[in-house]
Image (cartoon, rainbow over all chains, first blue to last red; front, side, top):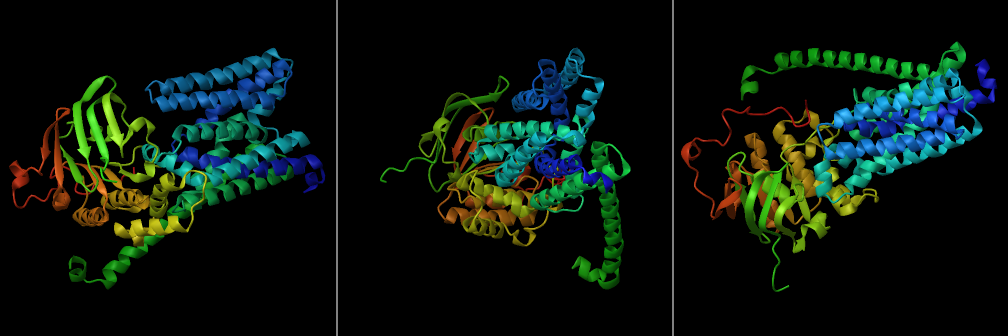
Length: 288
Length: 255
């Protein structure tokens, strides 16, 4: 508890909580569309933005938002074309992004510690301005994802049906792409470029082990994200571990606990149910 | 109105994929209240025809009008209910039957307005019409293939359309689901709705069909009464289930 007497720890906690809520709210749509790793790819592109920002002495986060948004829109346009080479185009973008970032950071005066802060997150250096940016953008993402759930669900569930319903499919897809870029960039502060996808995807994967519907999955995933973020920062403060890694490891630990628990529950029910059937129902009834 | 505009009007349409022509020169008119079946062998272009009607496949030449409006300028999508053959990519996240059916209200409600009472009532009615009211809260992945197909039909009905467009609605569907589906379609047409459906075989839908169009090699070779079944299709015990196909295919949503 000792570290929580410092303001920076509270800022770290608040920032992590906002990201813990916003990342799974967006991530559920990416998982549904089987684009779970897209956040990872956009994170790579954001790194080039960080490098450019450091080199030009501009705010790295702002330049990263711009770079990530451009990258996300490019990926969405490639995806919408549906070319078989889309896979390769994505690979080029991802590796180009991370190589460009490393090179630009190297060219600037920034130290490798500076690069590490973006690769693995640096919650404890969150300034008041950073926290305000995270809070405003995180709230905007969360509200948008919740308010547009029926339409975004329809587009991610069955894109052709959504088009025949007259939904603005292209606009909604671009909205998702831009929202991904923004979430990646604000989450970069918390968990780092290399761990971003974990916060978007792992809480969703955990939730859907036990949920039956999309809405309940979203609620459970956001709760789990909030829990992992809060508990992760608390563990980091007390055990003096890296906050980003602690958050992600806690999210993965909850996944394992829930997965094992759900499998055990299913096995238990299966063992009970057939026994019931053979015990109480004579064959004549089963066969009619 | 004295003159009723056709619900669907296709004139000399040609369409294809990646430069390979599938439809050559197709003209087709569906008037209000008709139930038109598009028949044909696999690969004849019958699915491409209805996908072109909905704008999912771009036209190479010719024209399509929906409710008297050229397809390019058509915006009243709430008048059309589309039932795809199956879901494309499927979903990685669970969704309940009710959630999938509720998507059918979006054409009527728009993107921004939250669902209200009218939406709930329409979704309930659609679930009831296909006999899935008791499964509303279940994940669609736990349903049989036929029940999943009924879910897609309920989704289209929930939008209260004037025209239903269905792509092979009964392919690989169990008998109980075929009957439930025929009942839902009968209620829909009794309410004045028009239907364009693609089918490989008609099964229990046969009495509902008012006109049949047979597509052969990208063109229409028959337009009129429903042709009599031929070959093994005509055998009295032919139950319209493909013996070489799985009786109940793996669910559309399950892997």
